[in-house]
Figure 1 (cartoon, rainbow, N blue to C red):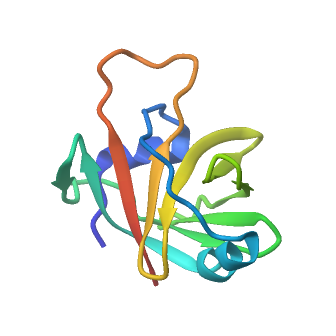
Figure 2: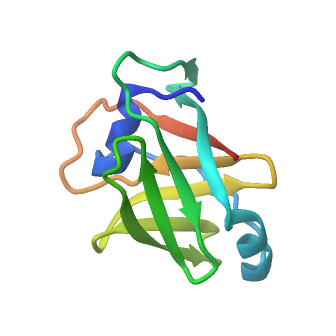
Length: 136
């Protein structure tokens, strides 16, 4: 699986912009598709596909039907969080320790596309990053 050093920001809450949301499933359909383990396939930075950077950490997400998820890191420093589906705005937010860190903007049986959620301390000119996952 391809990883990128910038993806670490996904875990620690680095704040980048997201693009249009596309999750149009019912909550039941979402649970059926989302609730499994997902591994990173690759990232797109400003529209350019990136490969693994030296020293980048490997991690997966394991989503559960009760609205929780586990962030599984290769170094064993795993964390748990909560996912919430906003059916009106058509996205899924991921929160760790009460802070929204990322957003699922698109999902189907074969791929999940996640972006980072902008925050109060954004720096101008940060790249647009999408992380693409596949079920494992």
